[in-house]
Length: 347
Image (cartoon, rainbow, N blue to C red):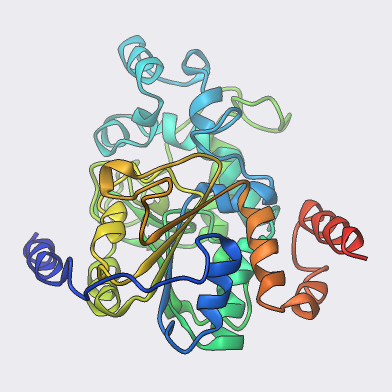
């Protein structure tokens, strides 16, 4: 709590420092690419959300077909009152108060995600590799602040782990929500496979009824992936790195996020006034945080579309064609197909 209070004080001190925003040659993707290549742009941060992982096959939580849209509380092991709460607000599945009372909604909803992560079912996308290349080719990446729990950013070899802050934790790590003890991921996955029922009807070997998974240390049924639940505390490195990074940011790229979750969304307004903000999304977001859209915007550039399409265009504008071709075996099939179509259209 003390750390968070100090962080708030420091963020208030650093906010709105830095003068007028840098002038872009054009307020579009080409203008941003030119700025990235310029000597004026030295420090770039990314704030990413579920949208950057959609091409991997992981649905965006808030989009049609995502977890919140497709949730069926009647299939989940819960009291009727808990089910009704989930119907009204699907995010209740990942509330800490809910998990401490009933672990099954979280584990049943997350079951395929947990087991899929174990077998590397999903691959990092062009958006993930953009961050890696920004570091290895240009040395301009300050940090990736990802709100995603999928861990895909860590698949990008050559990107140091300390360059990535998983704001909401990672599903590839396991700890006890009650006592904090760490546990082996593979062992936990086997327990999930044998103890948690499949509400999606994709695993005919799953049990018909869920049973508790206990922590070896405190013996409570509160073992789960090390993700941050609503109402839980963020990892300390979020507070440490934002204090270090944000005052020097020249460009913030906001990609695939609705910007409704705090304190991650505070990054948007805790960078200098001189910093440019590129918003890559299917729809306008963050107006309540001070992001401006339209002809009067002086520091904000909005590029509408899927993250994969926009980052592909940006990488080509930066002259990274050869690097894109080298990613064929590492990225999802849909991303490979997108690259081929884009390059074919330019011939």
